[in-house]
Image (cartoon, one colour):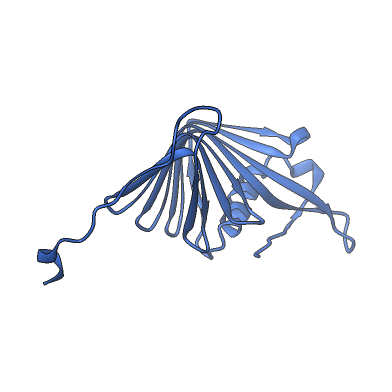
Length: 176
């Protein structure tokens, strides 16, 4: 597991919250590439240790891209024993509305996405669908493990809905 910390002075916390999100979110995806986030608006919520990006959110880093209507980044603050500063680490992301996440040739969509940095796990809900190439699966919930590049699809137990998959086998002409 990757972790990232850097000092934050209380007086400057609000002014550099965006830097916190950009630097620590990049490390939470486990890559050395910087993360780039664009949105129509950003709101820092110090009391909740979170930052909300609102409107046409587009985040990317390396081979991972996320789009949504809203993205909330939650971080934890840790006391540093060697100085009078605090350090912060991203704990999770919650995206709402028109969510799309891609990693290489994998695409997942839903109405909501929860990303847990410690487990490097994505949970898509609300008309959750995932594609790899032309193959598609859908269900109530799709859990995708970024490092393992594997997914678990679950059905809605309260309704008659089931997991659905469409698989396109390679044709003989493609193999030649």
